[in-house]
Amino acid sequence: MKKFFFKVACLLLFCFCAKAEVSFEAGVNVQKQAEDSSAAREEAMKEAYRTAFIKVAERLTTKENVDKLGMLTDAQLVHFIKETDIVSEKTTSNEYMADLNIKINGPLLKQYMFENNMRQIVAPNVEVLILPSYADTQYSGRVLFEDGNVWRQILLEKGALKIGNLSLKVIEDTPQNREILTPKKAVYIDEQTYAALKANGSFDDVFTVHAVRAGRNNVVLLMRPYNGFQERIVVSDEEGEPFEKAVDEMVEYIARYEQNKNIEQSAYQSKISGIFYQTSLREWLMLEKKLNTIEQIQTVERGAMDSGKISFSISFSGTLDALVSTLKQQGIDLSFSNGQYVIK
Image (cartoon, rainbow, N blue to C red; front, side, top):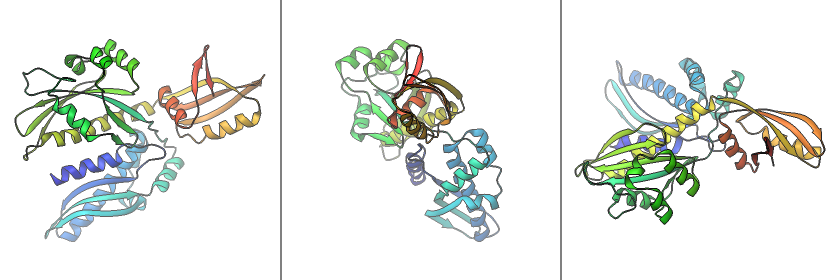
């Protein structure tokens, strides 16, 4: 139980990363045996350093680059370790076990990646809409906004669920949402329902999370992202409070799903051309300087200047939606108007 909550706590703190909030810490659990406790500890620390290093690297770059970083020797890798906090440990005559929190030297890792042409990924702010339906048993009817949805009530009582750049928002009980959703549609939303939800609110992704009570100590979660595959997770708790653990399991799964999706999207390389309307060259130079500080942007090229406007092209990693979101965080509006991209 203790190790589970330690793992989840580390995930909640460190799994989602952004340019201004990248965490270079990782929670690690190790257990090693050797001829004596000293040797066991030495081997355990080597494994812990490598595990933490890889966890942090996975937040920063693609799988291909992580595999390259994983080829570093133990002697090379130890230079990236900044600090090790021992949360708990136990030693026997030939065994060492510990829960550790390891801090990686972020600037050094970024410098190494830059020198070895390893591109960083960028995670934009992501808001996920949660559709929490519930059933007392596998064969009983589902409820969503109706009375008796203890699962939705528990999530509402938790308040805002925000992990780094990821925000989870429980769908509101409004006349519009009741008209759009039935308990059945909340589990298997179609394209028309998704479009109606999107028109009725702002979110980047939507997850249906159906909870089924399975006796006093168990809850079954059926989780499905829109246009994704359903995942079935059984949550058990000997103390009869499985819903508390179910919240952790839900958050962990969604965080990993969004992180992996962001890594996949960051592998894309794109280029757009557009127009910047300005009254002086100084305005463009200020904008260009700001654009070059955004990690998602690879290059910014200025084109012709004519009658109060400058043509430009931007090469960037990831999707266009992610770029638009990142620019908006910097106070820059990128839109598509009259057949061309425009920056304001």
